Length: 228
Image (cartoon, rainbow, N blue to C red):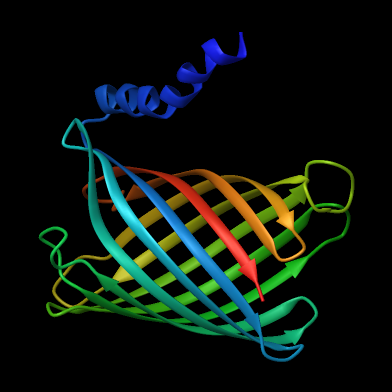
């Protein structure tokens, strides 16, 4: 019974894409795997390095598998209090050579605050970004509310699963263009593989430019996190 049901489970994401594609002509879907490495310099200062690539799997009502871009990301994080931190990041997006887009340099400033009154941890994150391309510089403002909790007991131990959920709103402003409003909803399941590593996968649904030219975007995410 288990073996016969495995092909069905593997095909569910593609069946979901096809269903949405028939109901939404302006749908694009991606698969985005990533690798993140966290390195603590002191008790209050740390670095985060990540590599991720984005791949088309559904576009213009067709299933496909084509690379869209590759991102190299670095963040420096400073802990202000036990539940508050600031961070500064830089991202370089390699897109030329993969599709018709241009490369991008992105600078990020971030403030994060968390609270954990019981088992569930709540987080709020504010970000400002400058997205620099050869055509223009876009200023983006982001707010994200998140929660996470272990799915077994009150404490996350090695080998146990956990849940992470995010809801985010974004505003993008650039000279010569109308403001763009986006919204994102992300759901992830993860496992604490060891004392220093976690693996998680999930889905993210985005509505982009919903005040003018609404676009639906679906992401299938997979991330491996390592702490040194």
